[in-house]
Length: 203
Image (cartoon, helix red, strand yellow):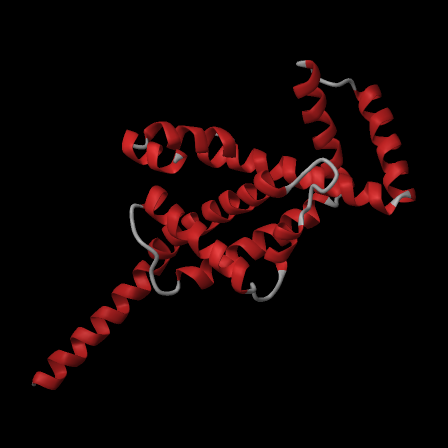
C-alpha cells in the first residue's frame, strides 16, 4: 500500500512539472534575454569606438568557450545583474544559460545588422535623431544607395557599418527592455547607492 502511495506521489509530481514547465520556462527565458541585452550593450558601450564598433571583447562572446579573463568578467557581470534586477544570487546552471543566451542573441543581431533591409531602418532612425524630422523616401534612397555602394567596394567600410548598426540596434533593445540607455541606467544606480558606498567607489 505504501509503495502505491509513493508511486502516486511521484506520478503527481511529474504531472505537476509537466503542466507547469511552460510557466517556469517563461520567467527563465525572460531574465536570460534581458541579461543578454544588458551584457552585450555593456560591452559595446565600454569598449566600442567609432573606428572599432565591434571590439574584440564583443567578438569573444561569440566563441564556443570564454577564456579565463573573459569568463571571470562575465561571471561578475552576471552576478551583479541577478542581484540588482532579479533579487537573487548566482545559482548553479545560471552561467551556462546566460552564456548561451548572450551568444545566441549576439549571433542573431550580427546577422540582422548585416541585412540591407535593416540598413534602411538604421538610416531612418539616425536621420530622425540628427534632425528631429522624418527622412523623405528620396533622401532615404540616396543615402541607402551611397552606403551600399561604399560597403560593397570596401571591406573596412562594411565592417564599420555592420558594427555601427549592431551597436545602434542593441542600444535600442536595451532602452526598450530597461527604459534607459546603458549610461543612464548606470547613473541611476549610482544615485541610488548609499553615500558610504559611493564614497568607497570614488576613493
